[in-house]
Length: 115
Image (tube, rainbow, N blue to C red; front, side):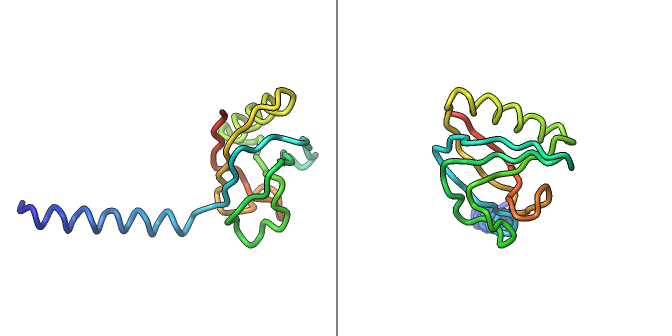
């Protein structure tokens, strides 16, 4: 394979990754603390946060809370982190999954990164 072919392949690959990630990009917030927790009877778990989420989906009309699904392993892991962060005041960064599939007006957590 020629060097020009490799460069072309890498450019196409990078473009495909950028486009596919952009389509599913969610909102972000950095240096967040939890200000309240609300488990809901329907199964949703809502956390109120100290910072407004930027770049979230149109469905997320309340930008100071995030949602997690306790019916999934990932959702339970997120809930564990949120429950640890709340009483300790630990900060974290948030990225949403670009949807409101757990609670209709609140973005669902894709990942959290604690500090």
